[in-house]
Image 1 (cartoon, rainbow, N blue to C red):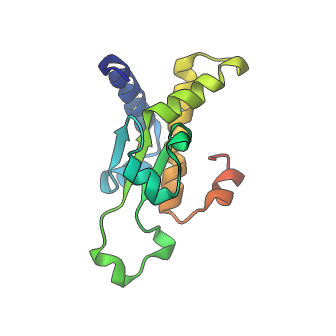
Image 2: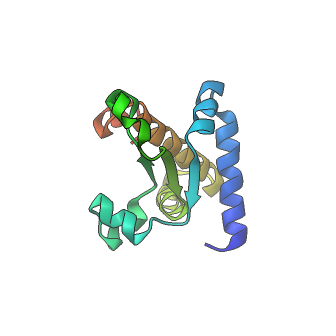
Image 3: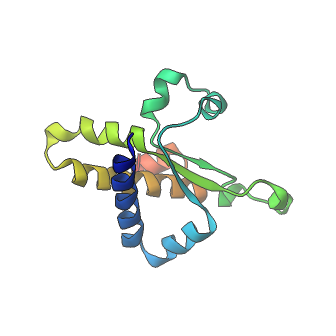
Length: 135
């Protein structure tokens, strides 16, 4: 992705964060939201994904969900949420036939991805997230 494309995407991310409820925005002050072009080979390996699956990954939560934490987890790495521009852009483009502008579709997928990863923070699994429309 070129620099102007990154800047446009990142502006959409900022707009979506600004629309989230205040309590969710507070969470993102404690759990950094990182925006990358695509997942690294190391991350794909850690997730058990092939390089061909890289474009399917829109985001990832790294950390221990609230329901799984214990006092012993105090010294673990801090949690982060990472979203991937390429995966989100490709997903939005794949939905163009359904209608809507690319910007509207990007905003929708950015929001869903952020909320999906925040759901993992709260201990929700993929089935839980699908049931509430964030999969």
